[in-house]
Image (cartoon, rainbow, N blue to C red):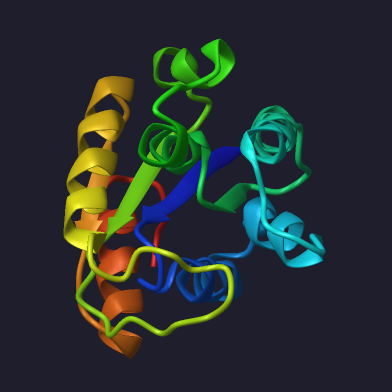
Length: 171
């Protein structure tokens, strides 16, 4: 089983790309838990909510799946940056994640798609800054990664090419 994380700022097409990769490569898709959690809240979220999100993400990341590929729509790297930006403090188990990430390969999506607002998105003006921070943290994991650009079918093809060149998939 190979764990692949689709990482990137808000509104860069992570969910779409992850689902497209599952349709082409097979495997399993693990949705972004934070979105589901926040959408179900009746009022705004707080630090404890983000801790709960991080705990569930940890369970999902380390779970066993019966598929050759598991495509994760985000991981704790994004959550770590969320803690940093919003609360200026990070729980120890999230802080330590980059040292023990179970992800085998990262696809970091560039913020080259137009921002599409929705009630769970908060950072339209700092997507490039967030992407740089995500890249720093991905590098700290010492796991291989590719930076993905383009839109629509080009974005999917660029991701497939990256995964092929990395020896993860065969087309």
